[in-house]
Amino acid sequence: MTTTADRPVGIDLQESEETRALVDAIEADNEDLTVLHMPGIVRLTKPGRLVINQASVEQRLGRPWETHELQLAIVSYFGHFAEWDDDQILIAWDH
Image (cartoon, rainbow, N blue to C red; front, top):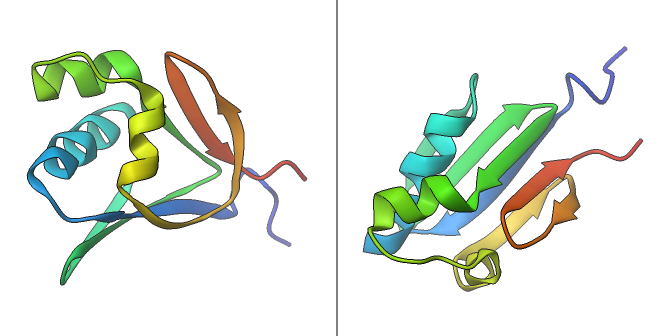
């Protein structure tokens, strides 16, 4: 039986210059992350939970980044946005 800790979550992002920095930041902050590049889209998947840290994204972009900017890059996702505040986004299954 698959538990929520094992069940994959993920996000599909539009491929762009800024998205590359976002993907690099997510990859740095998430062990066991799978990154799949498809034409125009990058799919990021991970068992259990995926975290996006504002500070990590800002470091790679070289400019301030607000978490709501993620909405401009999202194509789709699976899991729930368990947390979305000014410094972190967490995608996980609630149950």
